[in-house]
Amino acid sequence: MSFVVEQQQSVANLPEESAKMLVEFANAPKGLTKEAATAGLGLSHARKDYYFDQLRRRKFVRLCAGRTGSEIRFSATPEGRDCLAAAGLL
Image (cartoon, helix red, strand yellow):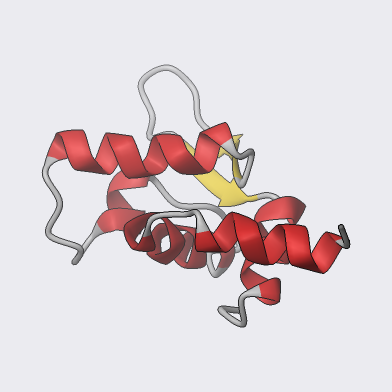
């Protein structure tokens, strides 16, 4: 199976809300908090966590900044951006 086909299948299996979050992370050069990435999606806290977990499980986002007492920011990984590109979402 080719890399592009694998990436297209990854997006196809990704919940729509997770894909929307991944687009936000990919377009934030300094990273975003989980809350900022889900702003405007109208999700409960539990659903935000669930959809974010889908991205972490697939290694589509990574920690990019954060320490005790400050906000924790995440950014899209190269795999996450490849996945978005394969789906035409970049």
